[in-house]
Image (cartoon, rainbow, N blue to C red; front, top):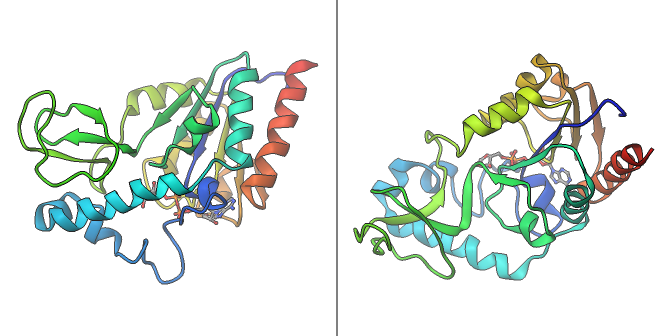
Length: 236
Ligand code: APR
């Protein structure tokens, strides 16, 4: 631990599960009652914008009824206390990391409380329902859509992410099934460049074999315990 200065953390739906936000890959394969390809692809948006917008409107509205859990709070504590480099990359589109106080955060799959102009690419903070064809505040075209990275689209800030992984001494994956690329490949990129790798998840994931260590259990228990270890090691 004493060798560690640069930490990169990847979080997934599992970290928000105990706050009451459903994970994606559950028995039955439906995500809040829908097939992913009906609500989370550019084709779905083109075919039925009303359905896609309504789906994300409901997810955005649900944020008003959830709160960060002990795992989000622990990562915010790490962010405040860690004097070395730190980047928390989340695949989640909820805002529970920032509501817990995390600052060094990157939303690689977009954000529910944001709208994206499908024409000029401007992102704008958004609360409440987002009707199809809402005008972009920048270019004025009626082209605002949910600011969600759909399957087949490029996640945000991949250059920054790859650079952070390259320089990481420790890569930690929390609450993700390792089923969706490019995030599922981060462990191998980090390990290739010499980082230690740790997985904290409820159950073994598709990527578990790639980690130096996997700890199994709920994020609300594993993450605070791990954060105390790391902060304790920094203090020594
Ligand atoms: N604590 C820790 N891990 C948990 C908990 C918990 N309380 N509850 C569930 N998990 C684990 C599950 O065992 C599973 O391995 O979290 C993981 C959640 O996996 P997914 O539902 O596949 O979510 P995620 O990996 O974030 O999905 C990646 O897929 O659909 C896309 O863009 C979407 O960002 C999402 C991406």
